[in-house]
Each structure stands twice: as C-alpha cells, then as structure tokens.
Length: 369
Image (cartoon, rainbow, N blue to C red):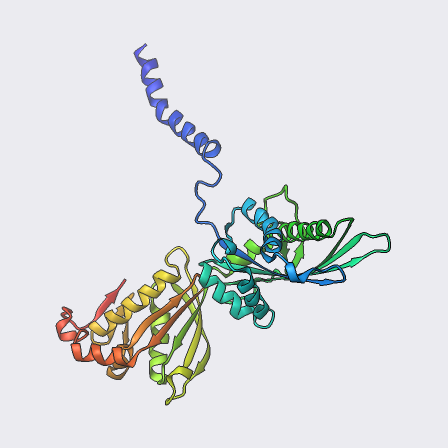
C-alpha cells in the first residue's frame, strides 16, 4: 500500500506538467500575447458632379461618414485601432479644404494628419460621384474611387487602388447612398483581406484570417525602419558626429544616410537624413530619441570618450562643442527629428554642465555594455 502511494506521488509532477501543457494549448485566449494594436485613420474626400448633383446643399459630413464608416467596420473587425477624424474635427468644410490640398501633395497632408491624430498610418480615399437622369426617370450614380495609404513617415504602404462602381435607383439620394456603401464595403474588404504574395496582390476571404491584409502587412513591414532628420546643422563635423551616435546607440541595427545639405550662413536650409533599422524588442521611436539625447550627454560628461562593448569611440573637443546644441524635435511612430540650437550650446558651455572634471568619471570615459 505504501509502495503504491509512493508511486502515485512520484508521478504527480509529470501529471501536473501535462495538465499545464493542456491548459496552455487550449484555454489561453488567442490574443493573450498580442501587443498593442495598430492605430489608423481613414480620410475621405468627396466630390459630386452631374445633372442631378445638388452641390449647394450637400451635407459633407453625411457623405464622409458613409464612405469611411464601412471601411472602419472592416478595420475594427480585423483588430485595428481606428481613430475617427470627425470625432475631433467639427468642420467638414475645413476638412474638405485640407483634402483638396491632399490631391496635390498627399504625402505632406498624410504626415501632418498622422501627427495630428496620433496614428501609425493614414488611408486617403478620394471619391468622385457623377449622377445623371435616365430616360425612364431613374438616377444613375457612377463612383470612381482612388485610394492611397501612408505611414507617419510618409512611406507609401503599397495599398493603392482605383475602382469604379455604379448604382441605379428611383431616388437620387438612394442611388448615391448605395454606391457609397458599395465603395466603403469593397475598399475595407480589400485592405483587410487582400494580401501580397511574391510581390503580387491576391484576393483573400473574410472567413480566413491566416494571412494579414495588405494594410497590416505593409504597416508591419515598415515598423522596424525609422526616418531620422537632423536640422540646422551648419557644420559637416556635427553631422559626422551625430552619425557616429546613431551607429552606436542602443537598439539600432543598421543606418544609412540618404541626404545632406549644408548652407553655412543659413541654418534653416541645413538638413541631413538617415534611415535606421531598429530592434523593435529593444526600442521604439520615442525611447530611441531619449536614448540618443542621453548618449550625447554621457559623451559630453565623459570628455568625449566612450567605450561601447569594449570598443573605444572618441569625439574631438570641437565635435563636443557642436553637440552641446543638439535637442529633440517632434517624433512619430516612424520618424524622429533633432535640431541644433546655437543659443542652447552657448548656455550649456557657460554653465559648465558637461565639464568632464565635474561629471564624476574617474577615468574620463563612459562605458556602455
């Protein structure tokens, strides 16, 4: 009897392990390990033309809600965090003027709107509806929809579309509403179920969630790439020093400089642009911005010498003086901006904040593991 009891006790840990595995496989919610959702906004632009168009008394807000509402339904169903621009902007006419500008410079409008609504990406939908009377007294509405998506750094999401819809109804408003509903439903379905395979867009099904839609695919693909801009740097020496910081700061895997413009007598015209690849498990744009500023301060405190993973990096006194004016600018989920403030550099130099003799470093160098 005692032997049986001992055998049962010995097998107890094994049974507990099996039960834990079963629980982990079958009873943990599907999205228990899911991260924060991607935040997007749909920006519609509506124009009505034709014989039956009543442009004098158009309710733009109604048309915008119809267009974007069905698209937003699909996005929410596929776990996007959707921001409704009309919950924050009361004036549809003002919004319409912004969207008219978008037809000429959609990238600028998209980046501004991403910052305004604090979203990862914007999808712009231009809808032109042409109405005409048929010979039997019906109204025919023909809609041409043009869609384009951008992330908060202005990168195209590759989810462009151009489609045509039409509906014929006895009532004018019914014809327009029907074609708007078809537009919203079709655009939302394409963004959430179509996906890219070997560079080609292929249709999907609402019933299969195996592959993310084209919008989610493109947003996720860009998540690890950030645009970094340095403004008002009138000396190449500072640009080079800042580039060294980007290469060595924590969380950055790779960097590539894309542009450089230096006009010594005009700081406003000076800029330098980089694209960096980050490890999303270690950092994000906002933490990276803070880490860069902290690293610059540590370099200044250490007298220009740091040791990163056993490798020494040295900055000259002139580079250090220039870096004293470095300060953070605006940041989004895909881009970070820094700028150089000459007055800030002078004040910090006079205050002696970054004098290595007062920084508490015995050997005059900072060490980063």
